[in-house]
Length: 416
Length: 156
Image 1 (tube, rainbow over the protein chains, first blue to last red):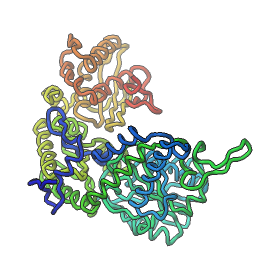
Image 2: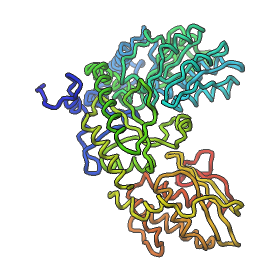
Image 3: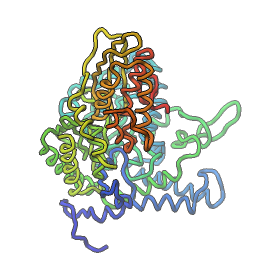
Image 4: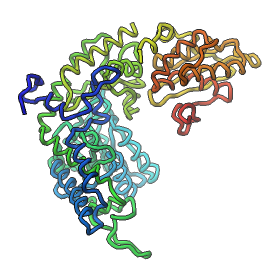
């Protein structure tokens, strides 16, 4: 690979080379080069992922775990190979602890159903935080409504940080489960998951971590972290949509009933009784998203080839540059100024609704998310209906940070 | 797609200085509009004399398109009867969704014609009209996204 003169400010990380791995970044939008700053909603795919999926579809597709024929065996090897790559990526002890789901949302719903509904009742409490995405709120409300348990919410401060002492105070003998995001999708706040898990485990309370916004941006080691459940999505990790992962500690998963019945999750079925399959298949009823899993495996390989620590350092440099560039714009208020943040910047501008900002930025080729980010309680806390959110990934550049700032100044001209 | 077609001077002016902003109390009819996708909320209150809208106020938080559209609508419907309001709504709806829709007798409302080049913004401009329809019909709350609230644009 030839050396390129354009390097990011972060040491040897060659962002221009990374960009060439993502074909979509070469396109234009409304006649302007695409500046994609919405990776927290969904990251783009590198060629390695696109080709792995294409190769599987073109050469190897058949149903998994069923046939003796060659294609079925190839498909099974590809599917189970992806499971093993995911296991290594998050350092789970066993691939029996890796359950493929449609995404983070389905992974959390699985735990809500098989762990929450099956065990909780009146007097029990589920403890979450005020930073959660709707996907880590609504499933627990459904458990509450079905079982009569309570949902307890730990508050945040004006910077968007969890009030850890308040959280620890709310952790009680009634708490049966803690469910927290590792990184807030709306604000970028990194939550103190280590101390949370330590405190919960001291009381014998299991912890589910919503890692949707974390896995692509920091090394996740579920054993070192001590998480009992860890959920994430493929498409925020440069993989396909419709595939995600629930990690669960084997002792817990083994005791949980299946949540969906069907093929693949059984060992033996008669009309009188059914013997469930072993882990992880007990939780994977029906034909899975095989090509999605193959793509996720390739995405994990891609991220490892860049180095997650190198990606994190690059993104941190972008976050610092963007925070400085946006803070210099008069009338712009950053929403979420936690000391420790992932590369997500939420903001509002005086006199310009986020929806208008989104349209004006789009006309400049700059893609940001505007709205409540599926975190309406966070918006309510700050007394705003919506924010604009720029999020950065492995392929974003310092030049794009300047594009964003320029587009925001353009919006101010339009509304001047 | 030109930004200046969307954010015309009339739109920016009505966003900055919305006309008929506030709440009539008491009111003869009222309704709430909600666009959950962008968080726009609108409360509309009316005074009626028989069939005719004699006064109208709106309040709420929204983007420039929804605020300006509500402001322009409030000016346009004051003094009109239900049939005339319905006819106006149909013209505005055509303006927002159909290419080459006639501007006809829309007056200042014609400033909204740029919205049709921005499909994601059509709901912003039509929210106030659906809310007015709801107020004239039975009151209550309408939403652009269906769900448990009565559906407006979302069901189309």
